[in-house]
Length: 331
Image 1 (cartoon, rainbow, N blue to C red):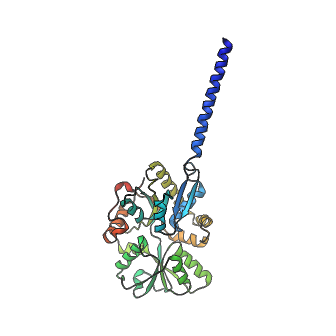
Image 2 (cartoon, one colour; image 1 turned 90 degrees about the vertical axis):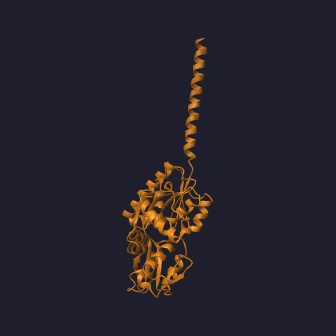
Image 3 (tube, rainbow, N blue to C red; image 1 turned 30 degrees about the horizontal axis):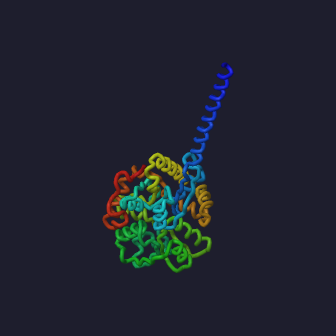
């Protein structure tokens, strides 16, 4: 009988050990199958913290693989979001509001870029947008937020209708025309404005001048709402319900944005590895002239709503006709 009891004990221990192994294997399997995350953004300053998040492994505890998807324009981003190909993306401030008002359960997590458009001119006397009366201005913006902001500044400066807007296919075309001496004035986003100045200096061309940022013109034109919350990070409709993960992503982005702002050269070198078409010097210059300050969307809701009200009054189609609901602002 004693031998039988010993055999039973051994079998029980074996079963327990086997069960423990299965449990551990299941736990390891769960850890190994964490869904990948796709971050996305344009080739501009708002995306640079996303690249640092990937290189620094900021989300390694929450996803086995984190990748970056470059998009060229808001229309392409809309397609990526509709097809579920993006989890978190940098975006102009109006786009998530438009999607939310169309019934997409997206959330705006933060605003990190407070103006990134610059007037570049051959004429040193053109120091402000108000000085463009009677002149031709290159712009690649025909709709969406940059076009709205430019239209509002020109109207506020009383030069709307007095400036001839020459539309280009994209900012690269505007840069090429300026470098070829076929245009004298252009409004460009960063880092394209810095890229134009860098290329012109290397080519030994006639001097070009960084005249006025649109954010500066905005403060003068709208003293009652001087902040210009231009771009930030949004959660897609499939990630927005996961509030805990969205908080982690927003905090990681804020930390990376602080690092980029404090280490512009290192951030430029990191960004160049991901976007080799942009030279380090131009990237660094773009970081230095851009206010990169990540603030939670819930914290800057008053500034966002001031912008949304202006858009809703004059360009309602750009945000879906109304202000987003309270739950839209942050995780």
